[in-house]
Length: 248
Image 1: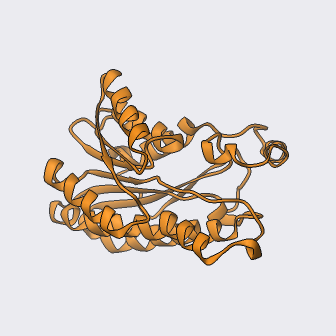
Image 2: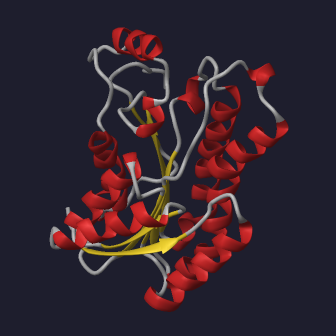
């Protein structure tokens, strides 16, 4: 796979699946925009990619803030032009009974996981349409496909992102823009580290591979959708869950 001379944006690229995705895109030859709200970690990630021989730049973005997203999109297009690849990878959630949540928490989860990606996609899409090409990959979650105990609002936001992916894919196919979705199952990320150990161990027992996924295994799936190898795949939802979820 090669993404030489391509401009690729990865949100949430300072850690976890986003960082693994940024690394693989850089290794494939793309100039990667490391987009994250964490300035120090984002700059360190971009520097690490450059030290490894890749091309990478950090740009700040808060995916829960409309003005920050608009400023980020303007900065990217001013410096680099229309992006070839957009990976909406930033995401977050908590585990608790639905009735213990608050409207403020719901707003944060839905804003980061669903509204933010829609806003950023809308800001960047016109330039992709004018060029007549592009790859958009949304990182959702299997929680959005099959539900998840204690993550009701998170699952709802990711389910919305899945539906958004399929619908947008229909709208922009005429412009040769592919829109696909990768749904990780339980993966060894900082978000998973916050889950109680007994829950993590129960998940491992339920997963046919008997282990959590690795961020780079999810990144492999994202890379496939970003490459021209997947030029005829759009509106697809790919689960990377070690066999935990096998529903169509």
